[in-house]
Image 1 (cartoon, rainbow, N blue to C red):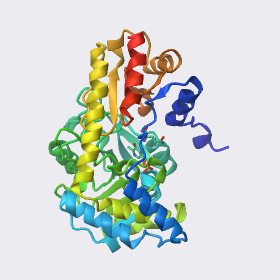
Image 2: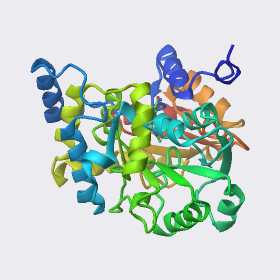
Image 3: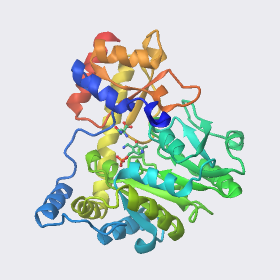
Length: 381
Ligand code: PMP
Ligand code: GLN
């Protein structure tokens, strides 16, 4: 057998969703919205299917979508992007991550990762032959400093995998931290794989700042976005990458033998969606921010400790505040089996020295579902 993959368990998101179904628990674990998504975007996709957009599209993406991504990057971040040379469409951000790692990493290259880290990162880095070097982040501010970066970077650093806004921490990194990271990236001649799937889920009037727009970073970053997050359509698996021509070309080489293409009908709908007006983008933020406040306030009313949430659709609970005696895995098991609410134990996002005192809840749900979960929690806490 293959030691690397046979040693892997099943992803925590699948495990928790299955347990939630078994126990009839309200599922605030796996991150996905329970709404339908924007109706006009759905209609464009449906029409594209029946109009016959169902054969292989161009390998690097539908021209309409590559242009829409370039326009989006200009509109939101002031970036000048050549859609033909600098945009690649992938089957979800997950494929973009795999393609970027397979394109950049030679066996033995070091890859800097920030913990907590999305659970796909480490298996992909290892499969690509990369040697992980961790920067350990902890609540409540989840920040890093010069000394932490100095420990992780070396002359062998080939890439940094950086998730901003950060799942599960709900942290949004600002200019000071981005510029510090940029300094180390240029200093070690590394590339940055920037997982920015939550770029449009940033609250309280703040704005996401992509690393690629910071000084010196334009030619060193692969910026990854996902329609799953931007349009609340997680099953669609349409991702897109913006990178300087040599990086985009290299990524395309990996992409051509991973999935080759992504369904053209969905690409057409995402192209339409990205061009939607500010009212759409603002509306998503307003709606999610309202849900964050509703759920976080509900937890606080029960006397529970809630960590700050600047972005993503996750709120983190300080398990210590519940009086529960046990780690986050035991807490989440108790929550599913005895309380009827599913959450994700945040230790699942660590490889070394796991933080075992925090549980993550997804609040991208109907208000009635959030209230149902709060009602169940109120019976126990
Ligand atoms: N990166 C992060 C940080 C995520 O939370 C997710 C989950 N949606 C992904 C990547 C995967 O995105 P996609 O579904 O587009 O593959
Ligand atoms: N990104 C989602 C989360 O963090 C889950 C994605 C998945 O289930 N693989 O919950």
